[in-house]
Length: 391
Image (tube, rainbow, N blue to C red; front, side, top):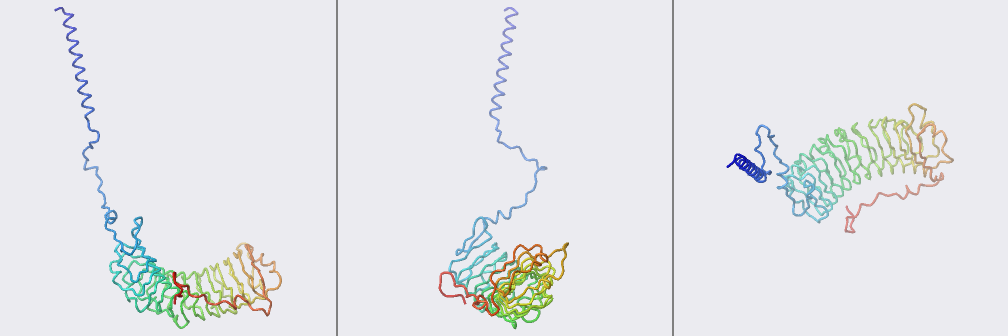
């Protein structure tokens, strides 16, 4: 065998070895499992907090009579179901909507576990004060809103939780506000008592003054002959429509933004009665006013319609001009008075931001206001699905 033959054989052996090595490498690469994860380095792992909300998702309950949407399982809807009793309320429920039913009495039993309740709507039922357990609401330490309007309540439920911020009691038969019912409601901002049977005797003393956070009080459609006294300085809106109030005291709460007193028996008010630094809306329509009064700089909307004004003495309403700090009045309503002739052009100088003066029709001196004459207290609304009015 010549040396050239030996070199040829060695070259073939080397090439075949290379091919075998290449095949082994390729097979190993294809068999490699890329989905296998590497072991986690304990030094790089971040501890995760337990997902309590996720765990609770599997324990949410709902009363069989009601509906709890999966998108917000903290609310329970039991309205319009002809219920005669409040169902048991699960612990996690925060909002209970049980209006428009036939519930007459409330016991504490359904609320024993309802420690998370923040809002209850029991309006449009048949609740009677004598059938409402005394401590049924006081045990709810998270309650913020309570709707009890359109029922047959004769008294304000008491005691109520200190956390309450909004209390709606309109369209009931309440004739008084006991001191113990409001004394501890220091966080209450809205109190609605419209369409009840409140009298001056039922709001004696400083019953409302302890509500240091009260911003809005509604007492329209009652039997009041005077404005509630000793209102807290926090009050911003007062609604006293359709009462029999004949006077307005001087020195009302300083933070007042809106005063609504149409359909009363006002004949005159003190000249400086509305000298308030924040008043923006003043509604005195449907009264018997005939004397002008001071209009504060901040006032934007003034309603004097259906009164007995024969002349608007603008120099009294606006005694001085301040171009650097002008009056803010933009709208004034004057229809159905006894005015003669157009409004003095001085009104636009005194109130440079006036957009509209609604003059409308005026009455003759001996002509009675037909709207005021025929106005009566609105009928109590009828219960849905029936002809009998709500008492």
